[in-house]
Image (tube, rainbow over all chains, first blue to last red):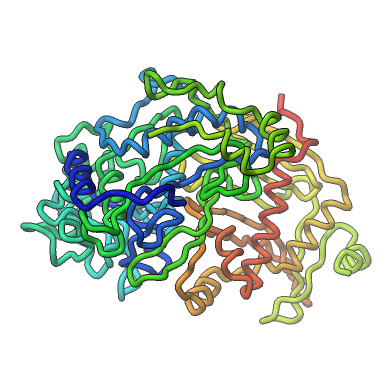
Length: 364
Length: 189
């Protein structure tokens, strides 16, 4: 949902400049569903530049709804800040997750990013490849995965020999380095076309911890969108590739940063409702055996699509850990979020508009 | 109807219809206590850890093993009634899971593939193994095993209503997911 029209090209360009740092190659949702070269945008984007508000809600009927609030507020701040980080995989005694539990905030961040348009930079487990950690791709004309990791013996790096596999990930044209980010992120600096790879590189490099290890980067660095979380592992901040892909989308339908159709991402946690939401989170064992984003999309413009409706489901039979530590020193406490019963009463008494007006919590 | 046939014609086994290639061949699931009828598990798509496993025996005993990251983890055991076991066997036979041809069904999927505008991310991998017997008209009985591995079953069931085999598999798996959380399960001491 759009809140206000905004940003001159100069301001957009300035914001992009401020956000420059390191990054990596990533991919967009629906690339594997027949939209290989399509850039996906969050719900509500229609080509009009400005601040794009994405309203995030918790299903009021979901179990653990109250415990989701603080992690979700953290996620909203993380995505609105668009700050790339390294060493963002925190394991064991270095995190606050009890052994054996799964970090809700980390998984929800990953799924929420699916629901605003991003896909896995790696093939992942959903495609039947023998190694899911190679760069996202199609099998190509021979209908077989060609997964030669090259001289570094590491799948997902720039020297992979993939024969006729078709690349789906966007990489930085200047260096195919998943640990740097271009000063300006748009279709002039990022590409899916392997012909645009620099030097001797043969395939797009992705931001897995394995590729980090062979790239002299701390191996506790990985894109949030890289599929596959481990138990007792927190990954609550964005990798550079995550930021780069979001910014690539924010260059708008014309694919050029600094023009009038650019948008800035403004997620907002609305509260416990299913009305007026772009993304609804909830626990539902009938929808997933772990966690999933279920989304539909529209493709009104060539090579661009937008999410129409999105849900993030979690399996309530899993042993989730709900982070209770705000990720900003002066972050509003989740205690100030209207309770489920309060929201329900307000909804009954004042109608949905009153709920929407009273519930907003997160600010950019 | 199949339940009735099952009860009428065989006292200790669930009779199937016939296998299409060999009309005189009967398919049934053994009902003795030591016989494993099926094994079921799902590997979560986004988690590098195994999911829970379910094993059902011919006498209706069923065992569930849940990994540490699931609530109520550990080993559990339950018991299906005879009627429930009849129903399960009949469903397995009627849905012809013993004859599930994954390659052919994937080909049918590909043939019908078009641009999809709906997605469910991080799909799990479903594993189902059925242990059945075939009985020839000449009296020969053979032990058989059918193994199914399928990625993104929920998604495919949503996107391919025209493929009955996928619908049947999803229906069966849905029942097995429920069974794996059956309230009658008791922890194994």
